[in-house]
Amino acid sequence: MTLPTGSVGVQARALAIRQALDHPRPWLHFPASLETAFRHWYVNGIRGARILLAIVVIALLVINSLSEWLIMRPDARFLPGAHFIQWGIEFPVIVLALVIHLSHRLRWLWDPALILAGFVIALGVEAQRVLGLTEGFELPALFAPVAIVSGAISARLRFWQALPAGVVFILAWSAIEIIHIGSIPQAANELFVGFVALSGTLVGLYGQEYQARRAWLQQEWNRLMAETDAMTLMPNRRVLTRLGSTLRARARSDPQAIALAVIDIDHFKRYNDQLGHDAGDDCIRRVGRALATQAHRELDLVCRLGGEEFVVVWHGRRAETLFTDAERCRQTVRDLAIPHPDGGDRPVTVSVGAVCIPASVDPDLDALYRCADAELYIAKRAGRDRCSVRHLQVSGPETIQAPAAVP
Image 1 (cartoon, rainbow, N blue to C red):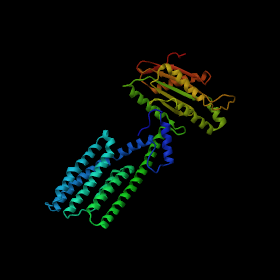
Image 2: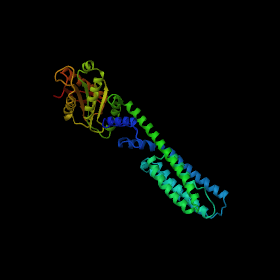
Image 3: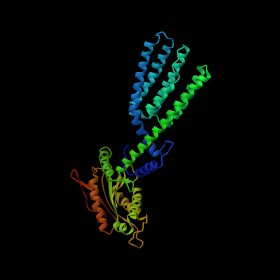
Image 4: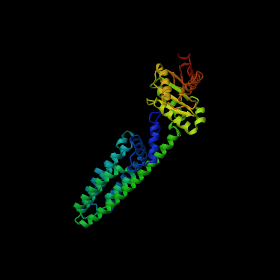
């Protein structure tokens, strides 16, 4: 699963993944923000195995029917009933589950279809056993549990799905066995073996899913760290580049005004030199968290490019609000009241350079960054702790030019 394109939720996702890695949950459930993504990844990963399983089961039905005709007496009275169960009930359900798994649109039905097919096959096998007993032909008692166990393991059913399904099956199977077997000790012995097989399956499915969850968390953490600043857990330059591609693709069908601000912490070198790198890192993290609150829409982005520099991208912002948006960033950091070692009542502040383009202009974040960076230096030369903004226009098909500064 790819990372969110904008800033909204990126830090929360990183914190949730790190917490899940550090404190694994034995009850096999992530916070809601992660659980949906994991299930999507898990079911897509096992889809191919389930499709293959359905094909194998159909092949086994064919082989079983042929063996019954060749090995058993063709006139065995239970065979018509057994073949009706196999081809009139089990086969259609297997085909239905196969068709459902071939469609991505029906992903939400994959697990229910698998569980239903498993029940139908297992209980169908048990029904054939009962038919055989009425005619003096005894099928192995554990055929049905073996079908359930092998199907659950091959299909990698999740533990909390397998547990209730397994309990329902063992109760139904137990009732059928007790009713149709005259010997209570024999029935009890068979039921115990079936219970042991099901218990072992559940333990195996638990371990299988636990390891799958750990592997997914590590994979997501590695992916997140590739596009996240490790110190602040904010998006990095790679996400900014990807956002540029997303905005250009979106502009073809839904053009929106784009604004970009470059923000730099004032006199940060003096802060770092006098208070130490640990204090400097903490300052950057606090400033980053404050600036992250300025991203509200899906494609808004706040990222750290390195050092004490941050970039904010606003999607769908009007030019009239550009100065207000930039000023809000500046004031948000000032309101943190982080003492600066220069003395006095002066807190840590930032300078902001911001530019925007109308919806009619093809968004080029590289060009916007260069223009906003130029505005940042205007703000710094003017005394720092202030904003400099411009509304940009396009000259020619690709070149962005900045007109006179907006007062």
